[in-house]
Image (cartoon, rainbow, N blue to C red; front, side, top):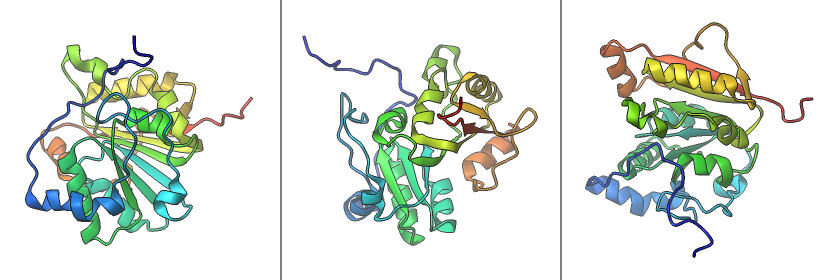
Length: 243
């Protein structure tokens, strides 16, 4: 019998798709990936991360700076815009869809953004082991797949235990920012994180104010056009030395 499992034991929050990429996107992986894309050692699946692998941020970025990690960066609109506005901060985009990664690299290159890196991997594995403990100043989870069918909700990214996953990557006092246009998922996010010992609310009332550092994307506009309210949450990492 093998010492290690040959498949993932936990459901992932995505379905791997292999859509055709444009010539420009294919070119991005040849020309731009050497700068932007961080190759990670794999474990049991193509999007997995070997548990012994560990990122050295100073080596990857060529400096030491505050680090912001976006989980599920999509086509990169939010993180490329943020990286362009904050050149003194390092940004890391975690995404599994190659076309989105390619678009992110193309837009970053056009904007002259050099303080951005990308990882093609399952985000919980990046947060819980590949990133050194306490290395991130902020973690962003914007519009994750709501998996709205009841039989699929177990695949949601933010479910019980997510606090430990995100909390590992965040420094004491670091921020976990979330947003969704799916009300029921927003309530679940809030319930989950209110119960996680790694975090406390960094907002008052029912919901946080819209994060002004999140650029308005076509995806968010589409949700608003359909009458869905955008709900933000922000939580602060509890000091591990407290008590």
